Image (cartoon, rainbow, N blue to C red; front, side, top):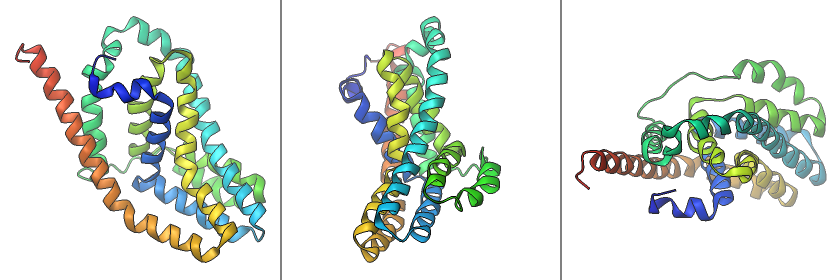
Length: 240
């Protein structure tokens, strides 16, 4: 990558993928899915062992889903990246507008209502919730497949292009992204095994803090996206 501001991504790509998953997890619709999963985990299991196992399987279900999608994209996308010069300059040309879009969505300046997979959640979510610990894995799969605009932008816009240009290491990006998106549920399950009161306080804090964290991150994405876009436009005009 040519932009020095993205040095951390180049040096710690796996950490970047995981961090993007965590950022996605606090978005409005992913957070709603995770809160639903938390309610499922907290109401279905009496033993702490089953609760932690359910949270783990839910997180693995999300990771397996994003990993499978990423593997398919990687298999067919590497050739596209090699043959399309504009994509080879992804961080210069495309990343700025994508970060602006992410920031706008996170700040809720625009609230797109389009969502893919809601019918899957409605059709299979309740049924899977009745299948005990084993259902937790497939619940994670179904919730991961329910791409809302925010999740789609984070996954396909920020994660996938950088994964495609990272050789074989990029295949692991979607897996780590999925773990990041499901981590709040896993943490809740572990805390629930220790103390139900502590676990409920954890959820309350997430719900309370989420708008502030999301807006700070959204403002950061928006400003950095504007910086990248303006810098690129100035370089084209020969002014920088």
